[in-house]
Image 1 (cartoon, helix red, strand yellow):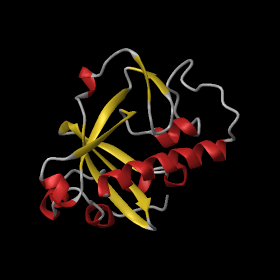
Image 2 (tube, one colour):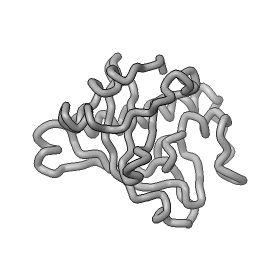
Image 3 (cartoon, one colour):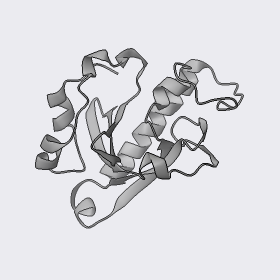
Image 4 (cartoon, one colour):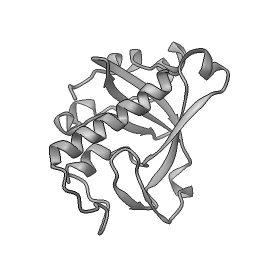
Length: 163
């Protein structure tokens, strides 16, 4: 993923108002993010832990989603699999819910998926972050194929929100 500025991120939101996008918490360490290793940029709002955000490229431009999820302390402790990167976690996967874009979202419609609670799927797939013993199931796919699958899963989630 190419590095993004705070302004590019704020204008990329598809499922919240311009005012909400202007007020949300964007990471201050954008310059320090491992952009070459990211299929999407994801973060949690430190002031509101039930809010999370995701920015990925869709149709050649950045698209951002406002997400809701349970507070990290309330995650279930059973072993679960992220539906984006297929990493197994004990207590590290949660349901991320995004209001749909446009009129459907204004009417209360939403889309959800189970994701790594820290939104670090890209780093788990690449082995840059470890979710513990047994977190990666043996696969015959190459690293490039697993990266492509992760990016496709993110794109499918974005497409569901914007449909």
